[in-house]
Length: 331
Image (cartoon, rainbow, N blue to C red):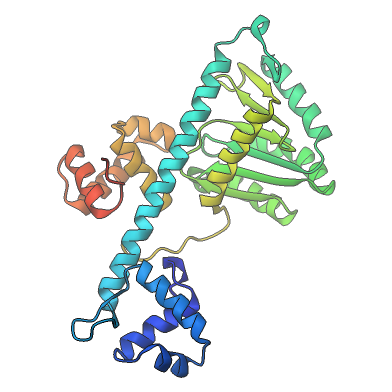
């Protein structure tokens, strides 16, 4: 029941027992639950680490469970802090990706280096991607930012997708959360899932990206015009970084067909991203562009979060977000 808050079933059972039988020691808890003493002690260590136990005010050396209301607030605050830290890691990866893209965007064909192949124009890009897709053996990972995809684009990709899946290639695709409002994209994801493909969404993506067999990556040189030019990267260090970026964002993303359940007061990934972008000083228009939503939607999200904290300015919002645990404190 409390696994999403960091407690396993054994630790939860021990916590509940200590609430119901506050004066029981380790032996009594062990007998009551019918568990090995080692498991009970491991759970006590975990509960202490999570600050769900406190020293007894009456008996030296004994522990008492903190009240459930206090305990749940502690666990949720911890989870919010972990979410904020995860968002910072993703942002660091995003910055590294942006720097990489910027470096290659400034390169001329004559200045190409080993592990870098430049592609100019949409025809050349699509021809190279088609060749790479024909050669891929085991895995294809993609970032597809920009909201809902065009129906003709999705329909045109089905033949290649089907060929790859029939060959046993693992296909993982990341879209932005805003595609959930696109019926054609959701229908395509459902079709892909039935055939074995995997599709997840996340609020924000750093760039368009395709990684073939973890050995070759294709990224555009311009985030605003993916058809203008692209680079094919094969350097081992670069591919390691791009694959780590993909796995980092994939692990926090939500399957497109899933309905996310949230507890009262818990932030959605999209709200957590808006908070981070607000803290960076982005305007509603800039946030809308990053999330691939309308300016009206971005404004509604930002105003709703400010109202939750009772903030009348974005500076005040940042301070209160840190106090609430929505943002990590800066030293």
